[in-house]
Each structure stands twice: as C-alpha cells, then as structure tokens.
Length: 113
Image (cartoon, rainbow, N blue to C red; front, top):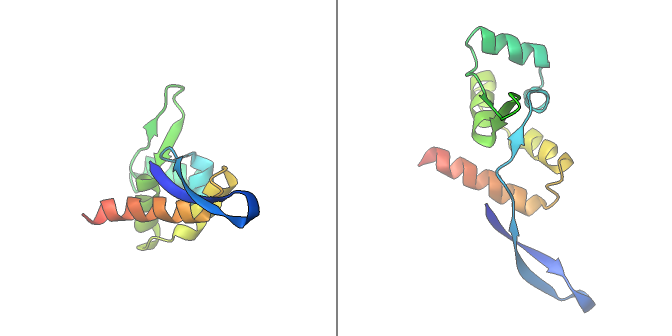
C-alpha cells in the first residue's frame, strides 16, 4: 500500500514523500487484544464456528488480515472500532498516525464498495 507523508528537512521545510506499508498481519494474541478477549476465547469461538477459521502462513501460524479483524469486530460487537487496531499497529512499528488512518480508511472503503 502506497501512502504519502510529510517529513521535515532543514529549517522546518516539509516535503511530501511516498511511504510503502505492507498490508498488516495480526497474530491470534494481537486479535485477542483488539477484541478485548483471551486467546483461548478466540480459539474456542473458532472451534465452535462462531468465528471464521484464519488463514495460515508457511509455518502454519494463524494470520489475520485487517479485513479479518474488522469482520471479527463486527461479529463480536456489531461495530468496528479502529482505536485498538491503531494501537496494535503503532506498537508494531507503524509510527505515522496519519498513514495508519489512511490505511484503515482504505480498508473500510473497500468493504463498502
């Protein structure tokens, strides 16, 4: 995903640069933290087919996309709250808040259309 952000150069001048972020991937523990439940709860809900089964990476770890997290929030709370997602992404090194907002807005706009 290509996003734009301003960076400061000498004497307070700002320039617009391109920043590339990959689509974020979440682990089960991060998803549990976003949903404010335990990892065991996420596991049990997947076994009971209340949550869709996640994709797996090449090491067979469960991975969740941003869209998957939105779906789980809708299933759990009937609403989407981007604040815990932004918090997790910030902790993972996505440090530009405006870029995070753009990323989430883009993901949400894809859901609507």
